[in-house]
Image 1: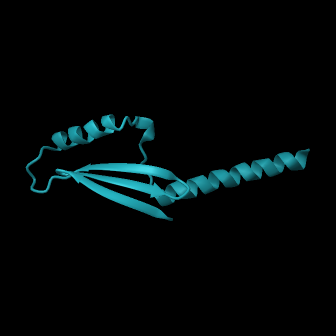
Image 2: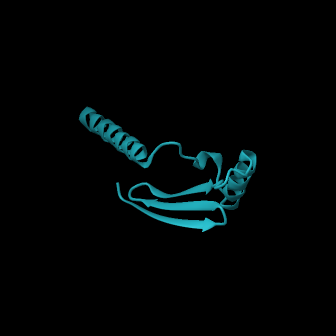
Image 3: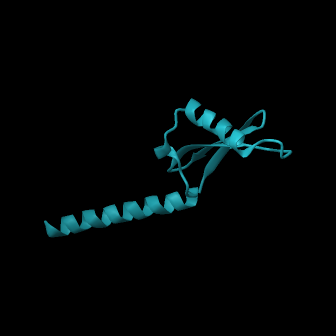
Amino acid sequence: MEKQRKIYFLDHIKFHFDQVKNLGTFIEVEAIDTDGSKDPKQLETECQYYFDLFELAKKDLVTHSYSDLLIEMNEDIEHSDSAKAKIKESK
């Protein structure tokens, strides 16, 4: 898997911008509590702020690894190619 990552910090918020070959661009926003002083709800609210700022939707969330996404994509292509081959055979 080929990936280019850029990381930026804004105070205690960490942004990962990943460009993954054959998959596209991804962003991860991480609110970091370095000294244990922040309430988890506050951290979640801060992440939500950037989620909204970047105009992301729940459908945009990805819970799988890039490797898993590539495997799924390849399986979808194989199934599609297999279906196309069956259609051609029946003609």
